[in-house]
Image 1: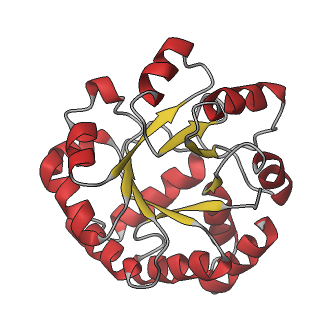
Image 2 (image 1 turned 30 degrees about the horizontal axis):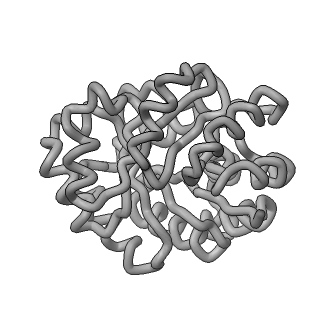
Length: 244
């Protein structure tokens, strides 16, 4: 299986123009998917680095409408699928149907809302599907078999499988437990996007046999934070090449 990366970035981090350059670097570096996070002040799944990036993005003036304009601009750079990631508060405050319609208009192919399961989703899954969006379920290794069957029997194209409990950021060792989980999900013939703590080529190589794409996010933000004053484009290109 080829190594595929779903690259996670934060809109407006470290500022609007730099985030466009970072998107360009991820695309030019060879990512297969872009996951663009709309920052939120009280996230439930983000580790320290992504939390800091989101705080900076909000200070730089991120709002939902400018966020969609950013997606539209990045859409012009590439044909690869773009997924918008955010939290329920942002979507519901903006208005679910309005948010989904603007996702489509901006050129996004799908959305990931990790704190809204499909059976308590404020209509996001049904409305998103009608709008032609991939609304991506987020599942963890602790999921019960019956609930996994319930979710995947709906026939989604993609599922986001987190590799462990907790929040993003810290390194995840890929072991037997992770592999068993991914094999169980893979039996449903769904495209698995899998992440949480992926930062090395070794991890990506191991995952490539079991997933459609590895999700990498914190590793990019960490590189940017640790190399302040340097070109984010060059930093990200180098990291992408190291992963692939």
